[in-house]
Length: 178
Image (tube, rainbow, N blue to C red):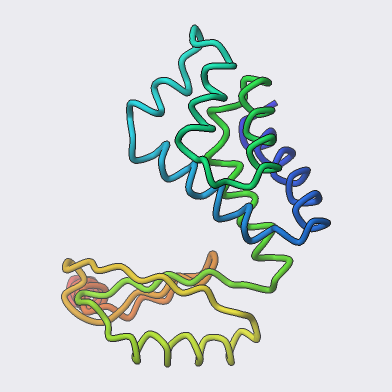
């Protein structure tokens, strides 16, 4: 079974439990914290993924690094380690977040701009997108100076590219054809 299928199954099982408990958002945050720590800390990742390190030691490490995590989520992480599925944890976190977003009618939106956008601009954009999509918006923003100006908005799997860089590329293609 592929890692994505494994992650989907584990995420679905955890989601069903979290929804019953009313802790889906808390679990999503906890899983994302574990996933972020794995991505940012190569030593933690190396220890957690190492086959010769006993499962019990890995479980103690999780308990030490994440002492404030929900006990039910901690048990889930212990189970994942016991089953040898630790490499699928980042994908489990992503799948779990998708399930939570779907259940709460949330659309993740990423705005990339050439400069840091003011909070009032982001708030206005969030409000307009919520009105257009009729969904709750979870907005994140990044800065990419290569865009020169304008913005790129990623709404789920759709991309709206209103950057100066893209317009210059289109102009260049148009001139080549002329």
